[in-house]
Amino acid sequence: MTSYLVTYDLKETTPKPHRAFIQAAEKEGFLYVFQGTRDLFRLPNTTLWGEFASCDLATKAFDRAKAAAARSLGVTVYVEKNFFTSLDDWSVTSDRSKAPEARWTGYSKLETCRQHQLNDPYFAY
Image 1 (tube, rainbow, N blue to C red):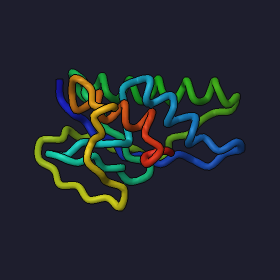
Image 2: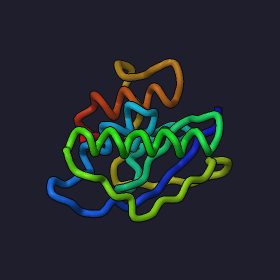
Image 3: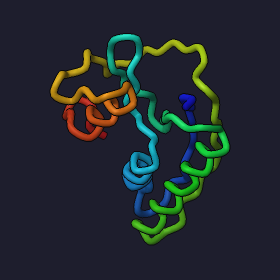
Image 4: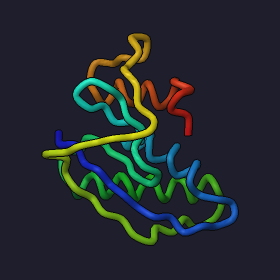
């Protein structure tokens, strides 16, 4: 599996689509908490990452999240732009970072990030 990063812009609607989209994206394997070599980092708003077999599968998962968010809100969720890339070489800084807590450490970096995103109030959306 390859780690992919997507950055995107959602069109503002009523109701606002961001929270519903984040919840749907997590179910499709995208997270806004990223683990570096040691610490966990909150990614910039409208930036997510996940592990997928290909960029095409990452894009399809993103599209499923958009459709699920639209169903839950009862309005169309418009993606104005997005960019997908594999994470071969990276650097990250964030005003929201900390060492992982043992109680939310999973079997992989992805699972550790998921557990912190879902359970750690420090990373609440």
